[in-house]
Length: 83
Image (cartoon, rainbow, N blue to C red):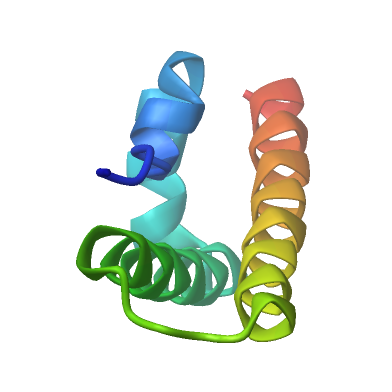
């Protein structure tokens, strides 16, 4: 079973230009996006390779990814209101 694609550009296609711009101009966004992508890659790897991991650990990773996604979304919305 392949994990869902959670790339930011897939999650927020309407913010594609803002994602590209903020990655190069906003250090906070860039750091959060890197952490988000790293976590997403880790989660998808566990799902795809069916690596044994505790439910608590897996759920913790997914919760952190969701939290980062929320933070990134708020930055995208704020940026869009300024543009």
